[in-house]
View 1 (cartoon, rainbow, N blue to C red):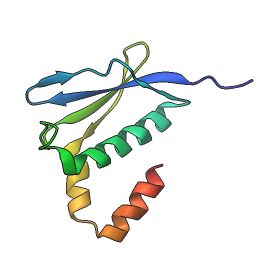
View 2 (cartoon, one colour; view 1 turned 90 degrees about the vertical axis):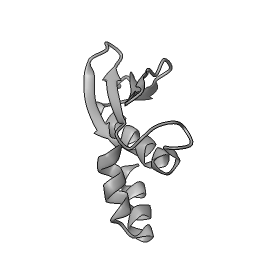
View 3 (cartoon, rainbow, N blue to C red; view 1 turned 60 degrees about the vertical axis):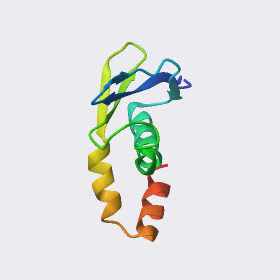
View 4 (cartoon, rainbow, N blue to C red; view 1 turned 180 degrees about the vertical axis):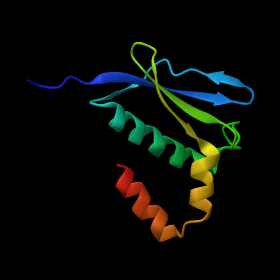
Length: 97
């Protein structure tokens, strides 16, 4: 039996309010959706000021029924990135995917 992809939504909970993802992404599991969400946070960390977010923002992952799957704090990943060398960061980004 083939496993069907489900739709997951990445909402941003920012100090200024909620930015709700209306489009979503497809993933075959909650684990894959959370890995994808971590990748999104890692890509956004260097651009927080440019996109009007702060390190206090959280990426909330919900499934197609609206159930919360997980939450990823920007600050938690930002602190790890600051403490990592650039080669280690590159390795981490590859391992997340």
